[in-house]
Length: 429
Image (cartoon, rainbow, N blue to C red; front, side):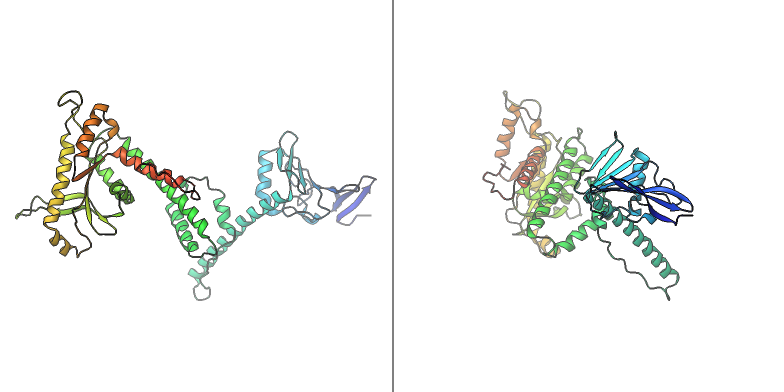
């Protein structure tokens, strides 16, 4: 007599009941149920019989009281084993590890025991795997469907409406799970999308609390300052002075114009780069241009910034008198004279500038700053002469590039301080 297709109890003893699956006259071990413990075993079966997997022979379940967790097939008709959604996980095990038994225990450990050829999972790890791959498959399926409907609409616009693309739940979480925490992994489109998303979420206080927004801003600010310092140090590593280096410093300051507030120690904004400040003769020659025209964001008072490079020499290398008297270089004195000349021309033609520019600025004894050289390149004797010269420069403030770097680093230190604690001592910037 031929046994009907399906799973049948074949034998039993005091320990367990043993089931076989019959199909087209063939039988195959399919399940074992243990009588004295909450334990049963499935033997995965292929679509046409035989082994379902290359290496995995059985699935052992412990502590589930007959109710299997998500991520595994519960019906003998479909051959037991992992769900179709977890096929990528199964293929990985088959191709990379010689695992012959999957042990799934409720509340149990998660471990890959290569030596004993066993993989240990629990209901939580299975649910996590199932959710991750479900999100990917759903995303792929909906993207394929969206492309199909979009194509049909372009081919047959009269009979096929243009589809509306909707967000797929968990798609963002799944995508970000692959991020290696390097900014350069994101494309410009990725960065723009993240920015737009954050802007939209920021409008909803139900989604982002003030605390989370403040923390996010702190992280972004720290990251931004860190990247700025990295670029700053790359420029200071350049060993040779040149006109192109000065241009690079000008471009850097333009891109990071917030630094001007730390140069001028007041709330300022970049008003104009390479601004015309006057000085043309009757034949339209000798016009003066300033590196950066800075404006106080509160009073509209303008200031003048002349920059050289970090490699520009501050003092002559040979002594002028004695052991500690050094003369300022032509570059330093020339820069001071130049920025003062720019201010003088601007003030003489102030009203003309204001009318042509339709207002927006004032000049009240405008401040002049020269950003030049590096104090660390000076000897102790030279530093003495430099400080004497600088402290007596009443109308022009002289700042070196390494001093400006210290100001930015001090800001970074403040940003890293715990926001819940009061900062009793502010670093000298």
